[in-house]
Length: 288
Image (cartoon, rainbow, N blue to C red; front, side, top):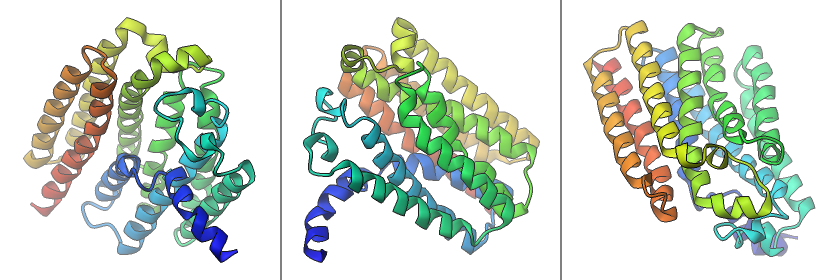
């Protein structure tokens, strides 16, 4: 059994995308934003550890259930045809068992917080579980992904404060819109393949309006984060970080304007630096 597990381990790492951690960063940064704002720059060490590990576990679980849902499609898409389930090196039972184990470990971690956070975690698992199937029924799977990625924010608030404040929902909305924007960039990479196999996305729905819509969403994200700064009386480092984020968004617009697959994927990857920028601004604000 141990030998078999050792043989399958590289496939499990690929299945959970631990070898491609950009998704972890995109989920982690907004979670850290929430912890820092809720705790005024000094989150508890316990919550910091719980949410960091939780992000890694739930992003990994999300990748597993996504590949399970797409197991009959990934082999027909250029970017995903080498994934473990598409190649048949991980079967359906293994994937579902791995998903359950990852969710269970994440739930055990949440049990070290409080009742409100534990109850909210159930919604997070539900959103993570249904997202991969939404692309069959709606052109807005990116919205469901945004709702799932942002759900760590109210959980971070209840873990730190035992309650939800208005700033939590501002951060939630900003993260949701930002996720839709960058996952639309991601969907632009697969648009031609998705059209052939009948999978839906915001990139397909928006068509030639895709770059403009992404730009409007990026402006909305900055506007919401500006409102957050005004409400929380944040100082100049935070607003400077938003200026940096605006510059990164402008760079992404330049990358995606011709809709080249590689440049769209590069724009998607660039979003991790938006998360870094805002977190750096928040950290500097509270240090001052």
